Length: 223
Image (cartoon, rainbow, N blue to C red; front, side, top):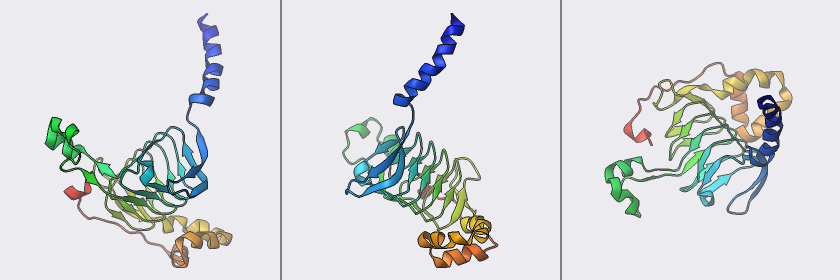
């Protein structure tokens, strides 16, 4: 009997997943009415404060993310948000610790952080990353998996967390990463320059170096 159950179980699970499992839906309409026909969003990502969220077209948001637009979040054209990432515009942990049980009765808790967040065009957010409230991420950025990102990240930076729990630092430049592909395929130059700019196309074709960031983490960099 148990072998029969096992043989029947997998087809039934696959059938049910059509209705209950994670799926990617095409098309997104922002609160202001702008429609993004090529944006793809998972049915299993949690959206909070969608009235403050603006997605560009050609954005991809995968499964099991938390997207918080409650205090203003812009995710520009072509961004990829992978899985299990948190992109935040508010933080309450200081308030909860300081106020204890009084926290739930306060309309404006002391220490509560509300900051608008932005992710620039064609940036990539790796899995299990946390984008802190107020982070301003430039265009063409790669955020490596398991990173904690706060503050400003310049265009085309590759950032990652060297020490778990610490702020991500700059580890490279995506223009260096793109150089070989762009050199092999000149037909891509106009497409790249359309969003990145001609100066950055030239930089990508000629670059050989990378940047590093050794700035120490401060208390204000944490959520």
